[in-house]
Image (cartoon, rainbow, N blue to C red):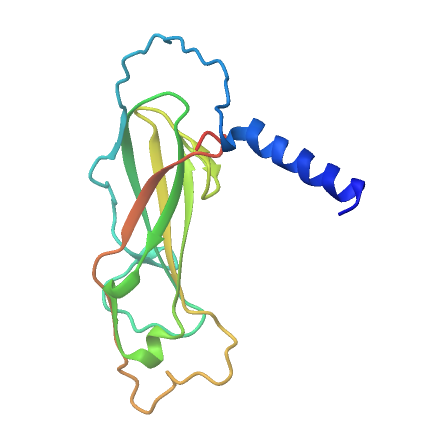
Length: 180
């Protein structure tokens, strides 16, 4: 065996022994205690809605009028937000979901939507700053758009029906500050 090979083997064996093959690795460690704190949670709840006059068809009380494409049903509701907490942000959503039932040909053409206000000022749907006692307004809209040429709801005798049972308004606390 030549000198270079023998030297390499000796150096490798020495390294294994130094790194723990036959000995130990020493290091220092320490710790310190950090004082804790108490936390208390807040909350966010909606009061029951005040929806005033009920549904309107083009601004007139809706009773049993027959709707046609181009018509829009609207309903305005307000809620009071009961909340405690700092830095409250909220997302708003309205879901007709499974509560919009009836003839599928008509349901396929109806478009539910909503617009929102907080204390009378128009807001979007995400990351809306809210606080206790804010009045949240929801303007619901069920639109039957005009101009859909191939509508399946145009059947002889009419009479297709849709039922708006319960539409759910949801306010969800959000966090856009990145403190997740």
